[in-house]
Length: 316
Ligand code: SER
Image 1 (cartoon, rainbow, N blue to C red):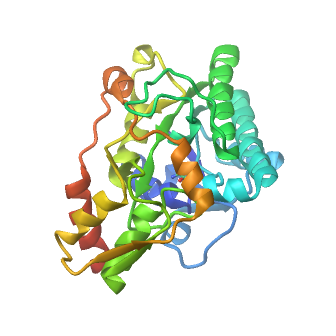
Image 2 (tube, rainbow, N blue to C red):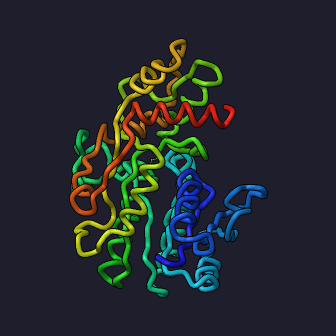
């Protein structure tokens, strides 16, 4: 990986991934791209930044050529709740962006990464310790996109030899850039409200368990997978990864260890609840551990301490 183009660089994952990759691979070797430019944003000001709407195939091609990239990290996509509200738009952006970037990877012989998700599972998948290889019949447009994406990436590997790799991410918790339009976002919002108001109203019901991971582990897992010896990868698209599984009560009681007056009530959003109910309680990351040494440093308690500390430093 010498010249790396990242799409969706100003999104929740991209923001932290680009900073870390600029550190590792050099500031001039990471081309951060996003649908819109945000003037004054650290990523826009301190390195190479280009505006790129991934549904514009010509522009994807033009920018990859211009910067002579050998790796594409394709992050731009709509998350589950937004996708469910705009299924056609989700299809166009999530699948259109993927095929456009894969095509350029094929043409320019690039390494390729794109994330899948726990959303690639559905109600008929095993709920607990969901295996790497199992039934995948998701009932959301996001899930349909993710399963199709996993298959498409496998296809580009087998058919054209493109070095495609991917991870099935759980909900990602981070303090730098908030997620937008996901089902697991509550696990980020709860920290902001706990600090600001000592109170949070959860749109996900108690007893709803979902996998989660702290962003530093997510960023490291992308880099570790991309650096992994291809001879050891039996799976490519996409590895189950996770660090913890909790329900709203679980994270609330962890926060209460640090903010004892914190309270939580519920105003369940039927759409996001239905999405969450269709996803696993916990997935099994054994294949990722065995094939490329996946590990997560943050569990619920360590992540909670760090989130509260970092958000307070930010002045939240
Ligand atoms: N965090 C994502 C979402 O909730 C799941 O991949 O949409």
